[in-house]
Image 1 (cartoon, one colour):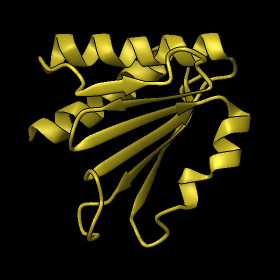
Image 2 (tube, one colour; image 1 turned 90 degrees about the horizontal axis):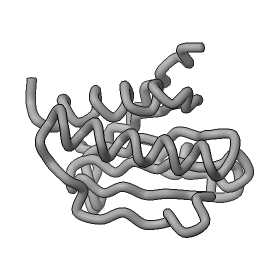
Image 3 (cartoon, rainbow, N blue to C red; image 1 turned 180 degrees about the horizontal axis):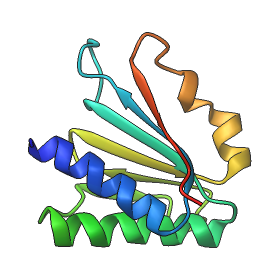
Length: 119
């Protein structure tokens, strides 16, 4: 398993640990001019759940894969938090922000995988 696959699987587990939902993994690796190869989008019901999901992702990836994010943005208001792992970008939204920014439909030509909610 590649490091990127390990990051993706660990991120999904960390999101599910905090009951994050509507997880979508978008593969951008075959598109030109993208900032990363994969984008993982999910949501939490409230800013506090969004923050808890982001913390879970950072902790679990650090412990299980051994890397820290290049950067994290959005922790101040926790409506939309972005965690950057170079090849993998993680976006954690509250539902209204996810709907408003509509990243799910931004790369229509890219393959997407919807991960079933676990609860």
